[in-house]
Length: 392
Image (cartoon, rainbow, N blue to C red):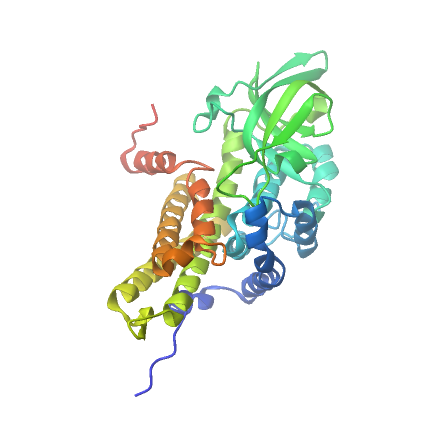
């Protein structure tokens, strides 16, 4: 009897049957672009710590990927599930590439779209959707990550204007951005400001010497008496619910995106195991290797099914914040374990840039702690289960 033909982990569960024709078309378009334009270059971009962010943003804008799940103002208005599938394909190349898109669309653009004035929306969203303007999202500070309520950045009234002072840290797209959505303490509570980056007193410095997300722009923002007009304030939100709702949009993209990194690691490990000969046999023929591959496939499949379920809930406007924490915590946790296990199958070859697994593993170390650390998501789920908050 002939040997069965190998199947991919997602084909094994007939994952495509869960998607509409439009969702498959969007996924396939992004996948084709990733294969032709990003994968041949990503190892070099990661090694040099430099990549053509503005050129890629323009290409993504032409494809309709920037703010794709938003309605109007030049945005594509796709389903949330389709956006998640696009994030998955982008992160199959690299987490940094997905971060460029998700920070643009789910943080900077979403904040303006959800909470901005018509003037702010009309000024910025069409340009950002086209990739002609890049945005960043200023919430995290050097001493206030998981506890943004304690932020020191502040804005004080000066006549009809505002004077912004402070700094933000670990800001994706920061030093290439044309506009920053900045959250600051005010006498009215935490407010959001739309800040053109050419404003006097605004500066952004790229953070170098990173061991993770090297194909991504990460920056420190500094505000030194930045004078802003009253029209710079996001008028439709006060307090932490503003930035937290934006973070939930980004976390949704992450819970899909990391599946792409995990899928790529599994595919690389499977191909390697089938071709790597030891003791006169491919190492895929050994039971311990098959156990690793099977366990990785199971976790990938479960993560994908969870993501699709949450995508359908989000499209039905039923997805709750604690459910996003479930998806982000589980899927990142499993993706990083898949990357680490895949590396063991490749042995010493797994630590080189010739293969993607260590690059993915390094990136996922950042994804594990940004947009809410594992501990924060654990406690969010614990609060939902018990009705008791353990944050303080």
